[in-house]
Amino acid sequence: MKHSTIYEPIQSFQPYVRLTDGSAQPKGIQVTSEVKDGFLTVRVKNLSSRHIAIREVVLYDTNIPFADVTPQTMFYGEGFQMLTQYTGTVEQPRVIGSYGTDWDFFNFERSIHTQGMWAVYNYITFMPEGKDAMLFGFCSTNKYSGEFRFNRNRFEIIMNTENIVLDRGEEWTMEELYAASGDRDQLIAEMADRLNHNHPRMVWPEIPSGWCSYYCLRPMTTEGLVKNARAMAQRIPELGMIQIDAGYSAPGKDWLTPNPSMGGDMKTTCDLIRAEGVAAGGYLCPFMQHPGWYLPTNHPEWMVQDEDGNPAVKVGRKENRILDGTNPEAREYIVNILKHFHDEWGIRYFKLDFIAYGAYQGGVRYNRKQTGIEAYRLMMKDICDALAGDSFILACNAPMWPAIGLCHGNRVTNDIHREWKYIRQNAEELFWRNWQHDVLWYNDPDVIELQNMALQRRMPDGTVTYPMSTMTDNEIEFHKAFAVACGGMMLGGDLIYDLTEENINVMKKLVANTGVAARFDDYTLRIGRTKKDGKTLIELFNWGDEPQTLDIPLEGNCKISDFWTEETLGTFSGSMKISDMPGRSGRVLVCESV
Image 1 (cartoon, rainbow, N blue to C red):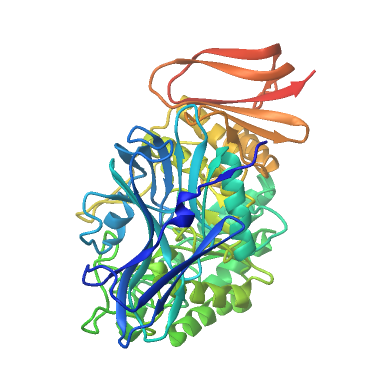
Image 2: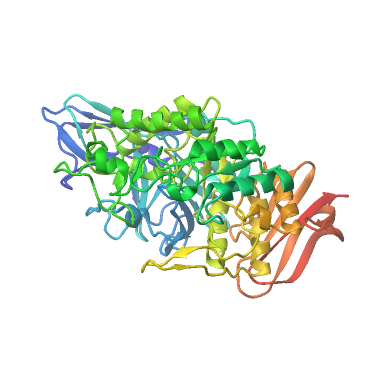
């Protein structure tokens, strides 16, 4: 494989700052850059006689077209957090997912510099047709968020310094940046190696499997959890763990106060689950706080504030508050709660949800000199220091780069629902992030749902309904192939005691085949390949509504069989054709060289 080519223009560019009031770099601000082993580091120093608030640092800007990038070039850009991803072309970008852009989701502050621009975060790859890919990626995530802003005419690389004041004589070091062209997989691997160098991965000896209550057990009760634990022990002990999701604590109280509707407190519930031979996993939402929750009510001073000293509001789709990770008392409180889970309830698996809020870019913190990313990493480091020695830490709805080095597993898709919209959408979200599995962390694709069911749903007017889901057999096959292509964590999302024997066997196959994430033949994401144990699994996807024919390239002579039924389909040389593959469907084939 040929070496990647460093993008030289970025190394000779003179970075500059933009101030909080929108003005350009003043006298007395010194911006220097250093390139070492192809990685760019920029430093900003205040040599003036006054303190200066800096909105952002421009590491690079250029007109489009540049190199092989034109308005028609395809791209993929990472989101700031789990729920956002971006693709399309430079002149026609689109969001992957249901929550809009990061600006939309978090109500990030706009400025004159963002007007008419799209923004993606952490890294961006441009994929000119028939030419080398180009990657711009940040390889550290200590303090600042890296943005790539563009429209059809302009491209900028930005370091968001959040309007923090640079004191007289103070110097800031920006996050490390890599820019190169070559094979896309190789470029990403080079960036990932550097990320792991700067933020060593938290290692866990095996990929967890289990079952989650959220998608099938409503209302959640101790009796229902124990019933599923008993069924797990009897029917599919390979899963091994019950992830107890939100709903165990009393509304408006702290997390240690039991919810009366559960029919049992958490210690009793966990003990009963373990008595069935199954581990109990816990759930906490440390950063995002609804206004009526215990912490905003009892400790408003622990929340991120506005300039008037009130808890910041209008974050996300609701007026959520944010627990301030720079506040040592807030961090101590959260760690002590989790220690109680660990020491008193016996929990050794922790799902930490909605944690992207902790890295929110804006507001006033206890330590006004620290950024959202620093706040997030301070809290998460304290949690990991307290628990990670013998407990699995799962990040969920996390800020993507700031989570690196501070979790064992990371959810990389939206919540799944028993509808085609979400089955399709989650697959696209996952496959662009497949490379992260077993490199940065274990990927969590959310639960696997194999059967339709009537799930309790509370309507806006307060009435409760039980609508039956309508997944088709083909859509379920697509979802099963998605799970195989993931290679990561495998959690069931159906009532275990209601699963058919056929679907029990499906889950057993899925758990047995975790480990390696699929790589795809091209950017259509129709043909994935997982090489494991001397065989190649070929995952096939028809994303459209109409039947399609897929031509599958093969290496030499191959015996092909069906992954699920183990039926032999024949021996093929050089290629194989699947005709009239139904719309919204998936298949998994096993390829063995002969």
